[in-house]
Image 1 (cartoon, one colour):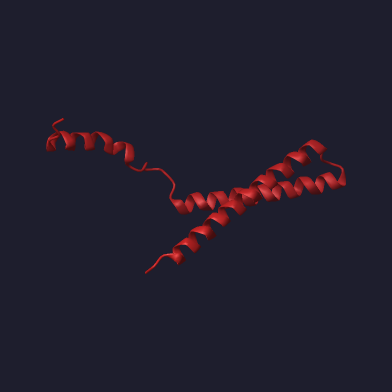
Image 2: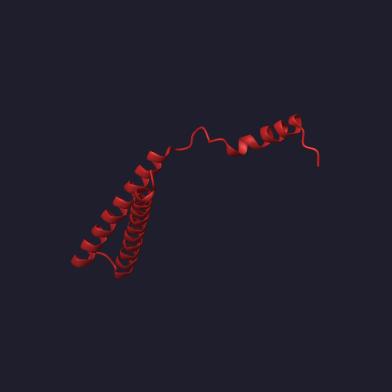
Length: 96
């Protein structure tokens, strides 16, 4: 197989749009901020539903659903935190 420079340049030019960032894509900080906002919203909504269930104004099905969503959100946050701590510890173990 003969690979010459013009062919390689053409292949690179054809593949380049697939690797470019989208102009309207969110940055990592925007994405993280949105994730934290969604987490807090989930917790607040679940707390409101739990309060309503205690006063008798919410049905048990919505309470169970809210508790399941909260449990999933907290487990996800704990898993992400554990991965970040694990990565930090791995960096600390690297020789300088």
